Image (cartoon, rainbow, N blue to C red; front, side, top):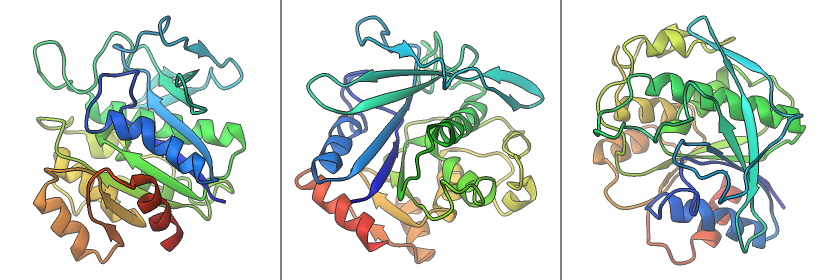
Length: 265
């Protein structure tokens, strides 16, 4: 049995069905049904209907302030269970970054200028909450751009935390779903504890989707091609790093394929 932490961007039915949202729902259940222990996280996007989906705040996990760019941002944790399954989802919420806002773009299709800070907040929010849960994952699976800071933090800022010391982190690659550039100060804002901005000098100064995922790849123990239309540049980049790579072969048998890949790391 393994303990698997799913750090998702999208999970159905909390967001509409998509290439990410469906496996976001089905994969944790499949891994659980194979005898593993799981925990699942997702941002509480402003489009998530709290009443319909029966979200409620977990007071004992909420209340921490995370400082990004010298500004305090309160961390709120909510929880719900996916209907007709045993999968419980923890939602990371904050009024500045998630409430009343969509995923990556506003109603006009313009990318939010602070998407980089949102990814930073989500990464730290998840990792701090897992610490509070006193849960020790063996495998951490990162889905979507919003989770792409996780591997960097795990290897540089949280590597001495007992609950993360021996875990393996996997980046799942999907087609690009975030347009435009991140804030030009992203490398400064992401600095936390021993995760220093100087460690990112090999990347472009202004991050975009590919640069963000390259950073995620560099600090991962495994890569999964999780759908069609993945950037060839990112796949070739992953191959050049000699990191174990599971190629996409369709949706059939996904749980077994992922479970076998976890065991191989």
